[in-house]
Length: 150
Length: 103
Image (cartoon, rainbow over all chains, first blue to last red; front, side, top):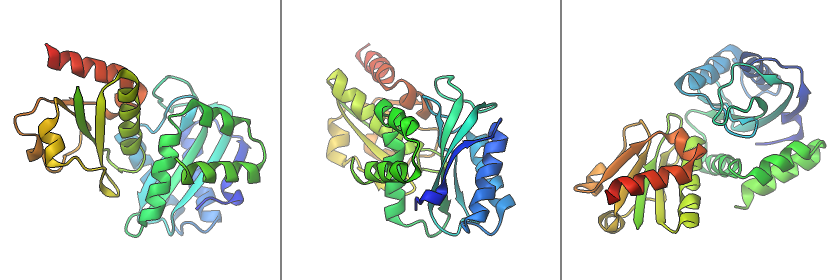
């Protein structure tokens, strides 16, 4: 569900649109979807319902999509503040978790992990730690540990 | 003060559990007994029982979605709030709702 290859640091992204395109494109590269455009459409549709920007520079774009082949979490940090991403505290988005979930066969365990990840993002300490880790393996372990614990 | 509630969002993946946890945490801090049911992608999580519904002083619905089993809360004071506000400022939400009930 989360692998080192799903983690992207310091990407050259400028806007929310860039970020959603990047995620969808990488999802296709990683074999998580066969339809990059369809997946992108589902991310965009979700953002239109309401923005997934949270607090402290984080966002959690997500798609429950017919085009998702398996549940996955992508982590992306951006070199630039992403324009056009409405957040709860007016801090620009620089870090995001993209949640890709198949519409039909999501699996209880994966949904539970996503739920735990989302609630972990309420904690400032979790967000600060994420931002300070620059090693992919270490970051993956830290995120997984948090999803299994609380 | 016993508060129960339900959170629900369009995808039911992230905002639903976040709002529920944020309100429960805020309740602990403010000294209110808060239990939030989540109606999300996993169905009903942490469901409010009929007994809990009966004992509640206040029902908070953190959603603009259609909520299942609202009959539980017949004759109860029900307040609907924006789910994002519950994540952003859960303590203020509780305080406002409690103030509205005490009026």
